[in-house]
Image 1 (cartoon, helix red, strand yellow):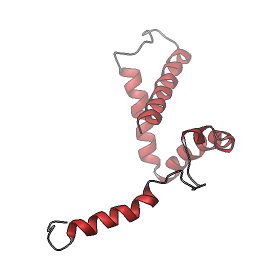
Image 2: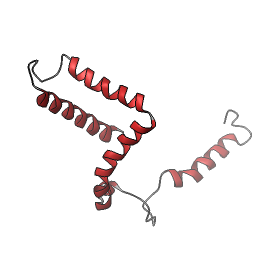
Image 3: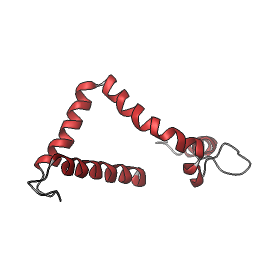
Image 4: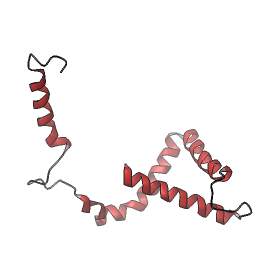
Length: 114
């Protein structure tokens, strides 16, 4: 690629062209292509609750200190944050509702932008 004279750019183009079919599938006769409506697949929606439990538990099992540190940092940032909408004299249920709404919004942002 550094030297375009000995066929470097041609080899680069042919490699990108040959691998683009695998990396970027198209709908032209390919039944394995998943479109935007694939997110509403009933099997995927039925498996989602198990996945929401499975992956955090796997993180906890594989890296317990990191997972606990992450969870504690989320709770600490929420507890000590000045920008929270929960009043200072709120009970635990109101604070947990704020934590859950923050996590839900973070998950939505991740799905939207990731």
